[in-house]
Every structure is written in structure tokens, then in C-alpha cells.
Length: 585
Image (cartoon, rainbow, N blue to C red; front, top):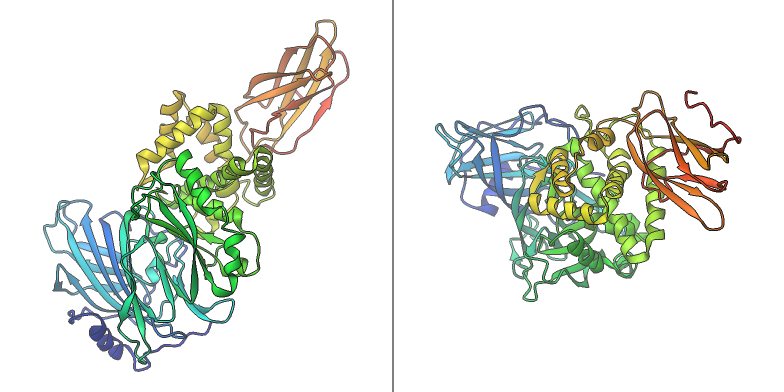
């Protein structure tokens, strides 16, 4: 993408224009380095980077240029508190844009800006009981995070695309999932565009300040009252049509601004692609109803499904899900993605992983609950088909030799893998099989109630599920999330007519470098004439033998007949009559 600067006269003119555009002048800082060297987006921050401050609210004002331009002007007003006494500096992630002034509680202040960090002094003697209002004004062309491009139909547009830590490219923040905050937006956009953002629209758009070239602009205001992580903060501006899809979660949407207490569900599509409202989004309100009944209330003000510029197939931004414009323009049915991203409003947005290595708490949950919607809407065979597809996706991936939770992984984009998506979904499915539907979903609802609006860890989830079930589940979470691989089960059987007994020998034949799995599962013995006897067993060894009564010779056996266990494709064979095979082979 070609980039050009609207402010050809350099940063001095940019500063002057910013002052006129936004408000009275702020004091000068200690200078702006020509090209800060940040931690590259997509890399985890060094230990100790975060934790000193908690941003509780962002009030972001963004001035967009005329269509075709790429320079923005920003005014970020952050409400923050120290997390402990003695914190004298607020350190924020910010990179690539020129800082034109900083103020704390209305007073201009010096600051330092280097290596992708903006350090703002708070003064000596700050305590955890203090609240600070920090304002940062800035301008320039974002290197990432806020994407200016011509859309698939050739018209200019701008969309935010923050995951995992690219918010820092267009507003100062604590750019980490652990620091959740509320947000409000004031967006000055070309008059020919519409603007979508998180939360509810605060009144109709008004006339805004013109662009530098004199082109008319309108001002849009949006606000979200539920805290989410900065990777979920978005704006989108383009020539789009807004299509109402219906309402949902009536009586189960406490943040709804509507008098009827329902959530408004809509599609924001490029005008050429409005037919997609009847393809990919035809059941979008029903999905919100389903999840709000199964899991808990919908926490946010609305739900907009937006055709956008994003590097992902879908991005779960709270209240404003972004989808790849190419996928929708092609006419492809993206309903599976819609279900996945809608489930993220509960898991990922409202309950958020405390750190990136815990990403399965977001992506595994969204994958599984996405599949569950189709079990609800289209029946169990469709659910099983989707789970089998997830199983095969995981088995054929290149990450089976890695644990799901890997604290050493520094490349955050590498976390978008089959461990966190399909294997994470299977971890939930197997837990459901062990605990039973009633206990499993009671535990899920308790987890959502406890950590809604907050962050959570795998340990938090484990403890909630242990409380719901009254069972020790540490072995289960350690085995499936902190160790690599999956079991491959070979099963041999033999029938002893003299004692009326069938012997089944189960061998774990997976990679020897992987663990021997503890597997609660069923073995089904088919005695013919429609008679199938099921036996619950615990497989805990590399080779294990089980004996079951069988008055007649079985016609076959099936290990895990209902596919509750994530396993490789082993073999089941009929052994010769007489002594069963040697279990020590």
C-alpha cells in the first residue's frame, strides 16, 4: 500500500494544525525521536513492562483525513490509577506518531518518548488511591493498527485492526490484554462516510471540522461502558450501508440503551455486498439469543457485523465484529465465522485471557461454542461433523508436539494455531463428556459470572469447574494443556467362550515422547442382533487389559463410540480365539 503524508511541511506544521483543530495548546515535551524503536507488534512485552498503572477509561478523539489521505490527528484522554503506592511515572505503549503535547490533570508536563514507550511523570508521592487524567495529543501516519486502503470495490476506507498488540500504532495505551478499560470515541470523518465503533452511538452525527483541504467532515460519537482490552478497541469509517438484522437477548442485555432492553443486531456492509445480510448474517440475532441463554447475559450495548479491512477472517472487537471484506464480497457463506466471533463476545471480550499464553481461553472457547450453536440450530450430526473437522485440523497441524499453554512463546501471531483453536475446543468437549452436560454448563455459567468484565487464567477456570463438579481436575488440565500430543489407541480383543468373557486390550501407541494419557472413556461391545453393551473404563497405562461378560461371541468392539476423546486414528482388530494378546508387546 502506497502511503503519503498530507502534511508535507513537516512536524512543525502538524503541531500547529493539531493545536487549532483540537484545543488550546499543551506544553512542549522533551522532544520527539524521529523514528521510535518499539517492541515489534506481535511480540510479547519484556517481564515487568506492565503492572504499575491501570487505565480505567480511554476517551479517544480521532481526526481522519479526506478520502485518500493517511494522516490522523489524535487526542487521547486517559483516566488511570497507580496499582501501588510509589509509582511516579505512567509508561504507555505508543510508537510511530509525533507527540505534540502531554498534560496531567490539566497541567502541561514534560515527557520522554523513546523505544516505543511514552513515559509521563505523575509526581512523587502517588498512591493507589489517586486518580490521574493524562492527555496526549499526537499526529502523523500510523505504521499499523489503523489501516487506510481502497476497499475491494476500489473506494477509500479506514479500519482499526489491533490484535494482538497493534493498538499502540494509533493511540497511547497499556497494550496488553490484562489491562481492561471502558472507551469512548469522537471521530471526525469525511462526510460521505459512516463511522462504526465500540459501544452505543451517542446521538446522531453532527457537522465536524473540515479537513485541511476544506473537505466537509461529520463527527460521530460512540461509547462503551463495559471494560475490554485495547486489542478490542476499534473504529471503522467507509461508504457503507447499515442493515438492521433484528433484536436479541431481550431481558438479558443489561447494557442495552433501548427501552425494550434488547440488543440491536446489524450488518455494516459495502453497498455492493448488501446481499450478504441474507447469507452470512441471517441467523446472527438467533446466535446472540442462544449464547445469552446458555452462558449468561450479553454484556454490551449492541452487536454490529462489519465488512472491513482486517488481516483475519474475523476479529471479535467488542460490539463491532470485523470480517474480511474479500470473503464477504465473494459471496461465500461465512456463518461459521459469525458464530465463532459472536461467541467471542462472551469469551475473549467479556471474559478475557489474562496473558497471551492463555489464548485457548478465548479461541478454544469461541471455537467450541461456535460449534455448539450449530448443534442447537441444525442438530447433533452437524455438531459432530464440525468437531471431527476440528479434530482432523489439529492432527494434521504442525503444533501437536507443543503444549497448548507455552509461556516461552514470544511470537504472538504464532499463537494463532491449532492448539488454541481446535485442540482448545476439544479440551472443553472432553471436559463436558467427563462431567456431564448439567455440571459442565453450570460450571461455564459460574465462570462467566465470576470473571465477566475481568481477566482470567486457566487456573481460575479449573477452580471454578472443580467447585461445580466437586472433583479434582488438576490432572486433566495439566495433561491436555501443559503437555504435548494426543493419544493414539490400538484395541485388540478376544472372546473366551469357556468363561463367557471378552478381553479388550487397549494400547496407547502415540509418540513415545508424549505422555501416557489418563482417559475416562467407554468401550462398546457389539453382541449382534442389535445388542450393544457399553462399559465405562479408565485408561491410565501404556497397555491396559479389561474383561467384560459376554454370553455370546461379539461381532466387534468400538472404543469411545460417541467420540468424546481427542485421539489419533488407531486400530481395532479381532484377535484369535483363546488367550488374548500379550499386553506387554
